[in-house]
Length: 290
Image (cartoon, rainbow, N blue to C red; front, side, top):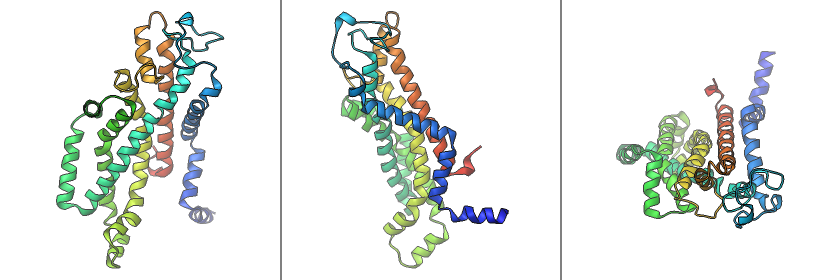
């Protein structure tokens, strides 16, 4: 019976095995479903809320949560629920774009460094070591100072700040993979370096980078909210979650709800991204599961 079970498991494709493990992973399903709901609510925000998120209405300023305004209104009379839902269009990309920039660039540099080694590896990794010596948030602040404020510049800055972390991850995987028998066989058959890296090395690098990127989404959302909180990203009256937190800080005694609901939304989003990342890590590499 055990042999038959092993034969059936071996007959299932690796991709299907991963999908099965994801489906059975409670943490992934909860996190992923929550993220899907948040994205859907943000996209459908104009149809779900009757209020303009940036229109000032001084007659309804600082209204507590109630039937007309479930999340209350801010110091300008704007509906908080409308601003939170519309704010997802600005805040959610903050978790994806910087990670995509860092993962793509870092993976390319790591593959080149690990594959060629010697002076190429030395130069790339020493630069990465110096880069990592600075905390990502400080590096992002420096880049924003150079590029200027704005959401686009914040996403670029965060992406640049995290590149060396993905470079190190990719390099370590490449150093291990390039010693495999199939890579040596490809060399013996006369395959070019580019073909070897694309066909034989890249698939080994993709899985750990994908897991690292998924886990990094939560950090990117938090870092983006922090930079927006400092006023370096979205400018008023844009309904960005970090900016709304900054507004709530100023009116915490008069309107506690102004900062509470965007803060809870950030917390839920970060938690969901972490749960999805944990589940994806366990599905792609079950041996890492504790």
